[in-house]
Structure formats: structure tokens, C-alpha cells
Length: 488
RNA sequence: CGGGACGUAGCCUAGGGGCUAAGGCGUCAGCUUUGGGAGCUGAAGAUCGGGGGUUCGAAUCCCCCCGUCCCGACCA
Image (cartoon, rainbow, N blue to C red; front, side, top):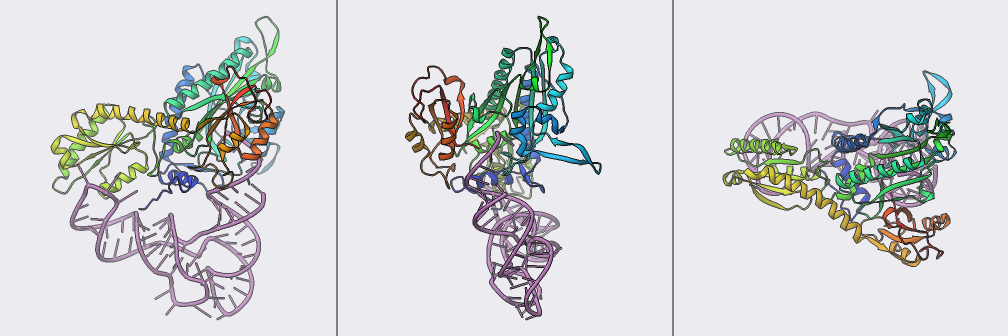
């Protein structure tokens, strides 16, 4: 009644905004383009952080922190890099009331300041590899923003590593891409395609960029994580030379890799429905909520029953809460917890108490069934696992149902239909992922983007064997297999 | 940065020159209820996005600005 969610089919963008605001994940800020991440949203980020951070440590990385402000001159040391970021830099020109000698940029990413330090820290192959990560905020002055998906300031992690050899740096690049794939698929339940970016889509300053790409419910692609092989570009730009094992000098090889709060947007857009947020149990701040139903004469007994069940759930390792708020009706609570994406709802009333059971409802499917109270802890664990699996399977089935292999231009364009304007990208629209052969030509890709707003999302790593045939865009000899899509 | 839509209480909406700006939801207090967004009574809450102008009189008409959303260009 109070909060209304615009149905996905009516207006997908508005549906997304309604979920973010009504589930109290975030709010608009007084500063244009920035967002406030509210506790319910931040709790999700903390879970993503914890999981990522654990994997980084397991793979030998250490956390550090580099400054927010970077001398403008640093950005300019790597030509492609500055060109890529120049339009979206925020620049500080006054400090302490006085004009600064050199403008400072608010970091859009930290390659430059980190490599300026690496120069001091790396003298010998014995100093390598250097495997650092930082959790930080960055700022990119975006023209058009969307909560979580694209904001002027966002939170992320950026890994920056330095290596002795090219092979080692390439290995690191792929290793971290795999860490991302694993965390995102396992914990966020987002099936992704890992691949290499085309030249047009790669990071400014990288030799090669790799990403994991997910499909949202409106069939558009969203880049969920990125890993760059930077070659010796930053090593040379910042003069990071080291003595090699055979006594010569060489420039350090670099990688960088990042994931951001955008992942929260991806989770929302992949799993949620018209009733509100749907969260994978592993990310949900509260995994189960107990809602008591009672009249005055049964209140005490029902509440006692609930406390017992709460204790059992906690003992079973379930993050559970007991909603004893007396000012709201059960029906209101049902709707509210659905809005908030709590994976399991456990209803207990006099009838359940008498039968020694509880009604358990799944957020993902809406299924509701009575379960023996004594078995509730174990049953809840199983259900949470089942939800986690179902969300992934469901998303993967959706992606597969909306992926089409195309062999020529006409087929590709037909797949994206005539709805290139108004309805492009809304649920029910045509399109999805198109898989086709590509010649590798930049013009070919640019023309497609201009014509149909479709871009090459990546060249999937596991589908490059035996590429032979014609480019589906221009008919020339193909060199790659590519995934095409409209993208966020 | 271009095109469009919109800004009236925490939220949604009415009023489109003339009494004290109306209603619903929410909030607060009390009572009563509770198996899918309950009910009654009472209360608080608005410089009508901001500024300027036209007018005897502006939420209402005109101009400028700001903000949000949508579409386009750019991007994680």
C-alpha cells in the first residue's frame, strides 16, 4: 500500500529504482550523481567485501591504502590512460584557501599514484612480485548516473600487482579474473561469461582487458568485474626498473583488477521481482525472519515458541531475526520482508504451536509449507542452500534462453529487432546475448554500435577453439568468437 | 552536454488567478486487533523546488535558475 513497486514489464528502469529506494538500500544525495548507501545496502557490500577479501588473501595479496588525491601530472605520464579519464576527472585547485601550484585530481583509479610509489619500492627481482590491493572510493564525473550502477563516487577494490615477467603478470591477470568469476557465481549467484575485451572496449592504458559479463533481466549485459594485463606501460611511464636474475635491467610488468558496488546493482537486477528485492542467502543480512501471529490470549505462548525457534535457527548457523513488532499486522510484515529480500519467512501462530510446526515460505519461489519445529534448523539450512542454487540456475537458464548464435548481419540485427529506441532493453524486448564470429575489425564493431547500440561484450575465453568462417558483421575472415549485447 | 517529462507535508495525488491550500498513505498518542499490506478517535506535519516579474491579488500566468527521472552521446 505505502510502497509501490512499478512492475518490471511496465518500466524496468523505474522498477529498479523502486526496489533500491523501497528496500532502503540507498538514497539520492544532495550532491548530484552521488548516492548514500544505507545500512541495508552496505551490509550487502560488506558480505561481498568479506568474500572477495578472503580470496585475495588466499592468493597472496595484501591490503594497503593510497591517497585520494593524485597530482595531475601523474595522470599525464601514461598517454592513453589520461586520455581515457580526462573527461571525467574531478580536480582540486584550492587548498587551505590558496590556489595550488599543481592541481590534484580525485582518484578515478590509482594506477598512477601506486606506480609512482612502486618506483621506490622495487629495485630487484627479489622485490617482486608486489601483490597489493586497496579498498577505496573513487570518483568519475559521470554525466548520467544510476543508483549503484553508475554514480560519480563509488566504492570498489583495486588490485595492483608488479611482476618480474610477462608470463607471471598474465597469469596473475587470469587468476584474479577467475577469483571474480568464482565469487560472483558462487555468492552473488550471477552466471557470467569470462572473456577478453575488444580493443575498443579495453581499459585506457592496458595491453589487454578481461571481464566477466552477466545478463540482467532486461537482457542487457553488465560488466561485473575487470582484470587488466598492463604490460610494461606503467612500469615505463613511472620508470620502475629492476635488476633481473641475470644482472640486467628490465621494466616491471603490471596488472590491475577491480570490482565495485556496481555488483549490488547486478544482484538486484538479476534476481529481484515485482514484490521487491530477492537476495542470495549468502549475501542476505537476515536469512530468515520469524513472524508471530497471535491474539491476546495466545500471545505469550506464541512469543515463547518464537524465541525457541529463533535460538534453534541461530544454533544451526542461520542469520535469523524475530519480528516481534506489535504495531504491524502479520500481513504487513510479510509484504515488508518480501520487499527487503529476506530469503525465508517462518510464520508461527497458535495452530503451528499446537502442531509443533511452523509455516516456512521461500522468497525466491513463494512456496510455503509446514515444517516440524524440531527439524527447523536443518530444514532452514537446506532451504537456504536450495535458494542459493535456484537463483543461480534460474539466472543461467534465463541467459541461455536469451542467447542466440548468429551467422550474419541480418540475423544479428533481427535478433535485436526494430526496437532500437524506446523499448530497447526493457523486459520483453527482443535481444539478449548474440554469439557470432568476428573479424576483429574496429570499424566493424563501431558501425554496429552506431546502428543498433549493440557492442561486443567480450571474446569468451572458452569458445575460441576452432574459429573458422566469416565475420558475422562484414563477411571477412573471422578471427574470434564474440558475445554481442546491449550493455549497461 | 542535447531532447523530453516532472517538482504541492516523509510518500502519492487534487487544485491551472480570488476566503484559512484539499485528500489518501505514512508518522505520533490512546483503544482495539493480528493466518497476506486491519479498525476507531485524536494530534503533529507545507516558506506549494528557488529567485525574479505581471497583477489589487500568484501554488496557478511569464522569465531565469536548481533538482529528479526518461531518451541520446560518454562510461565500471
